Image (cartoon, rainbow, N blue to C red):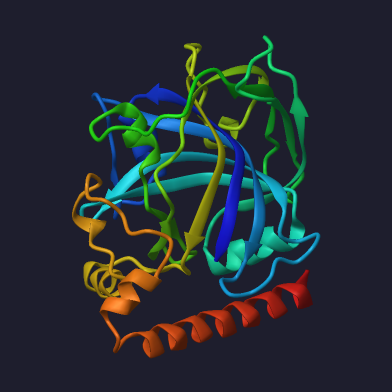
Length: 299
């Protein structure tokens, strides 16, 4: 899947690991920085969401999304664990729940341009609101204005910013408790320091967590191009096989440079593989098509 993440805010709070550990599957290790776990509330806009090599679909490919997340590892590979993902797209919610085993939820959401508190050459701010409406799920709300306060920078390995953002996979679990890993790829985050005026935030209430009163750690990104692969059961052998097929060797360390979004450089050096890669793409597209048809039939 290809997509763009736009007008994204990272708002993170330090929390004791013992608070989050019971909420994470035993197969995953809770990742810590500076002796603490971290929980993030991340509002943004999705744009151009589509299977790779396929066009965007008007009305389906662009929508706001808001996730609540923490950080985990498995087999030495750092990733993201989502407690919830709210989205203003009914079809996307149902497809993601079935395909990615992620806790997506329906929500009424608004994401608008907003002026920054002080006129700045850094550009506009964002006014964002979300109200969860998913049937059978506890309510959760978020309302804030936010934007950048400084120039773009890239997080350095070993920094908190790198720990919070340099994650190239997500983890999820199905109803049987099986853990899945979904690989993602993108350039280095073009991060900016940020301001935020959070009017309301009950996003962590459904997991029984009250956020600290401390000011959150804030980062902003205007735009990031992302590629995501369909999830597979997380085990070391399967991961290594998939990584090698894509020419991706970063599984051993976050500090290793990740592969670019462009596959052509790798394929030109491995002329035997393009046919296999195209076959895998076709298989993924067919599988995705079956899921979308099932979702449409049951929506």
